Image (cartoon, rainbow, N blue to C red):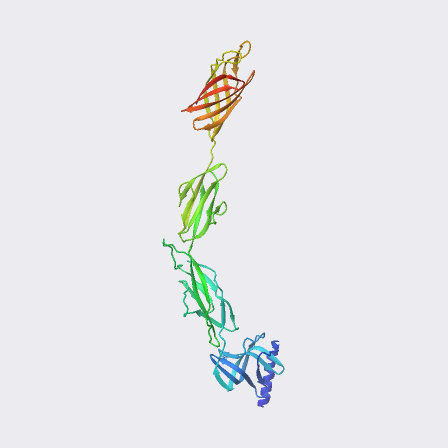
Length: 433
């Protein structure tokens, strides 16, 4: 009856294993074997903690699962009431990574200390940077061999430390919220700081820990502060920063490390506008240099260029001297023009003149001048001196003059010369009205 029961149990176990479809050929090590006649499972090598047991014989309690694939170990392990079998041979079939419960232990060939290779851990190095005041979570494990179940811890024997507010968990996750970089400059501002620490991997089955424990590092940056730029005024322009971040324009705020480092802002007015100065964290019209240690706001003020209002000049003009034929020029008349300033130059419209001209011809005839308001003038301005180009049309033809003037209070006094006759000179005296 016992043999029949064992054979029946063998068939049930085999059917269950084959149902997983995970039979494989394994030659890397001697597989566990199951004797259907006795119902005994023989284990060549079983490692529990730091002890290796050889030729262990047990009965099977039940099948927990089969994952298949490459055998994860070269020996059986026991944990949590379950036996993990890298390879199990049933007849002509070999099944890998089988997990069962144990019925009873029938015998053990021997027990010796287990010489299990130390795990090889490759950490992520360096880790992604953290920032003061911001939650952080990263796994420090890049890879670990051989394949097994591990816990992770700080290497207490090595020099190094974790940032304040952060913890390494047994699953290899470094998490927390750093509350300081642990380093300051001469002004007391926090600056970036790099922490180096060792990480150990411990095999939960063999209890063997990696040796030596490799090191990794993480840099903690100061908390970020926001620099915000606003633009005000009737004009327009752009503001840029060094280091880059502000391009206002489109990006008028940016985060910078609160390390006391200087961010320099430069304002550039658009065409037709002028930059009139900073307000807020800066003043003046030069570059704005800000030591960032907290959220900061600054305003760039731009004004639209306002066209100067035309100046109405009214006065008199007179000629003196003589022409090429000896006729004298005496003229007493009115003169006016509408002058518009444009920086270092000016233009004038509505130039109008009246008077009497003694013509420079054979008869020295008298002509009456009335140019109307169609004349123009232009020139440059340097200090209180103006150059002059004067073009007027009369019924008898054009009158063209060049000259210069001097500003005195609200009066401009010009000296002029007629283009066609250098002997015909005159003056124009105008007052702003």
